[in-house]
Length: 232
Ligand code: ADE
Image (cartoon, rainbow, N blue to C red; front, side, top):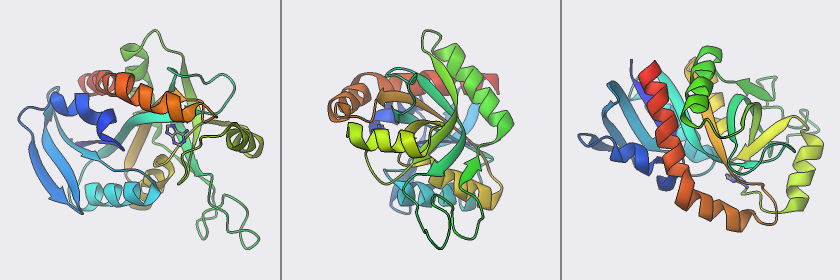
């Protein structure tokens, strides 16, 4: 079974790539894909780059060209819900695009012609990923639920308050997950995603995010991916 491991940024995936010494690098759609073995399993690791379009392209290439069997995203997110603090872990059960608004033709957040706002992750894969995250990072607080995505780095308290008001059950915000979830829905591909919280998407986010990315994100991703692959 071929597993795709996806992160948006080099800093989120560096420690995973370091564990794949025999990997082969290939370029497709302007991206580097590393094929190899990790913890005894065949994997393709790739940096999606940042934002929904980049993530959607990456997912489509993984599915159509690499014929992967499942896609796992690992990275960081801004905490939105009250109890979701820096260092916590959020596993997505569903995704929504918080910046999609074709109203009044369609309801706000609804993906036109899909008749839905939310795209679920795969139940069984999500359970496996949540168990791996819990065992890799036992001292962190763990959450499961809605993650919202948009083509904005949310870096003001005013904007995160507005997101909380319009989407009260959103746990965290990032810039890729909902796009991958939609592509996976279209192709019937299994998808799960885990994010460690790097900032609170507030006025301090521009300071907290780079520090967390530099010091913590990659280690967390590598630890979670290791537990996940060893257990499955
Ligand atoms: N990823 C990590 N922090 C984020 C934020 N504040 N906004 C969007 N994506 C993020």
